[in-house]
Amino acid sequence: MRILIHSNYQALSKWVAYYIAKKIKDFGPTPDKPFVLGLPTGSSPVGTYQNLIELYKEGKISFKNVITFNMDEYVGIPEDHEASYHYFMYHNLFNHIDIPRENINILDGNAKDLEAECTRYEEKIQSYGGINLFLGGIGADGHIAFNEPGSSLSSRTRVKTLTHDTIQANARFFNNDISKVPRTALTVGVATIMDAEEVLIIVNGLHKARALRMGIEEGVNHMWTVSMLQLHRHGIIACDEDSTEEIKVGTLKYFKDIEKEALNSLPDL
Image (cartoon, one colour):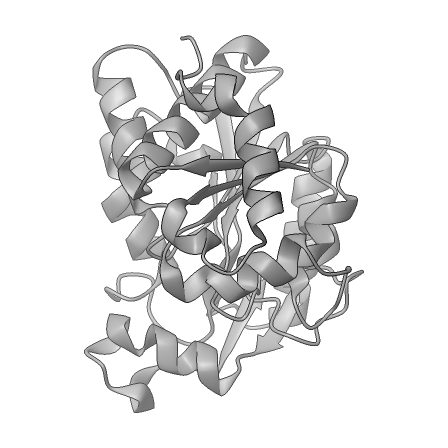
């Protein structure tokens, strides 16, 4: 597992955007062989999306032959609701780049049969041969997507009941009214994410420091689902200085030393 410790969120976001853009360009996607990209919502990827939009506007990257699969969606709120993940993705990324609408895949939280929707989603991912790169963030409790503490590490896309901590954390997207936050969501599973050829997780902020420590310094544990990244063959954590507050000094120095070349330059486009 690679860990790249950036000076701040801005530097982290720019590096991640350039890394994704380089992966897409090096892949050379075509209509018959698209690049398949997994995407998250939440505050962590916003800076990355802003940088990807700028790279597109500068003509450095195209998304015409990119297929996207989002991690999750709330159950029971309209797609045009400002807190829905459909709205988030179009507002923060899709409306500003050249990705065809038919290439965008987001779980339908209003499907009549939610279990069937989850099965359909898994099957569609497999129809493209799996995901090339899955981008993600984590919660303060170390969850990835909506795989809350205690989730099976072999889980697949499913209906998930959200913890009180997650509901409370997400109330900021519902005018800080916790009663308006949905109690359930559809989410890809831990195993769905781990099946990707590469997984890149963004960790930023002091409030994520404990989760980062548990994810990289402790053992693989279903109570901290991000820790499963330790077992991935191509796992990367891109974090900022604030989020490293609780990791050991030796760990900090080690990863700064071995990744200093990558940290001192952006991926070449």
